[in-house]
Image 1 (cartoon, rainbow, N blue to C red):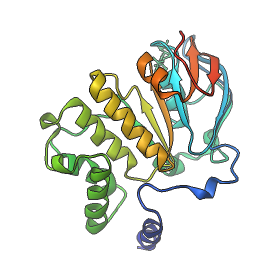
Image 2 (tube, rainbow, N blue to C red):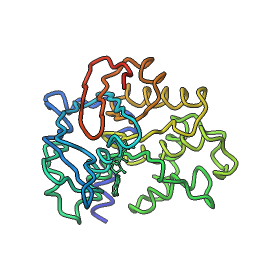
Image 3 (cartoon, protein in one colour):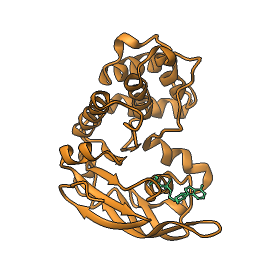
Image 4 (tube, protein in one colour):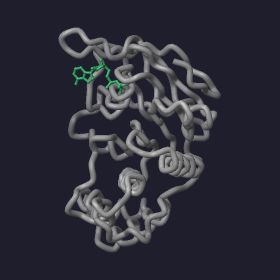
Length: 254
Ligand code: ADP
């Protein structure tokens, strides 16, 4: 009960998308410090990778298939453990977070991954609502937030459609909406345009830019050259697990 009340108070103060002034003094939100990840027996997925991400940044992560992009994102979510090095999120050492507290970390991170599929038997609304139900949100909170988030991603008219009745781009927007529902500080989007035609790919990128403009940090992994070159955002390039470039205004060179 106390938790519910606390949650309500917080929700009242925090609109779904908002500018984040609390980070005005923070140096970084995310820090990778000499991260190496070796999958047994000897696949070096990441090799001594170090970088920092500031609050509200939009960072592109590029590299060929197998370069280590997904591994990097999974390490941040604590779904994988680094072989060596340290990762900090909001000044917290991710490896030191007890397993019981990992859900709190993961609620600060909205993950848009290829394998986080929508539930086929639930509508767009129900897919997003489900993510709130599991943390004990009330029906009225769910009704209010899901309607708002569907509006933000431009899917109000598809509220009651099942995944099979949605286009690839619309499905991806529901996945992004679901990732936004806990008001994350950062969205990790792993190849979110991978299965989309160029028109719908651009649509998803525009949505991520809009979310970023409202103050949410974005890390976008892609191997789409056109997207990187037209975005002009900071770009980190991975090659065979090594970070070979980190540019303020990225270009796609592999
Ligand atoms: P990307 O996302 O850039 O395609 P990944 O991070 O998926 O790259 O993979 C990096 C390397 O790690 C690849 O050689 C891949 O085969 C390997 N790899 C990824 N996940 C695992 C795993 N769970 N077990 C063993 N090897 C893995």
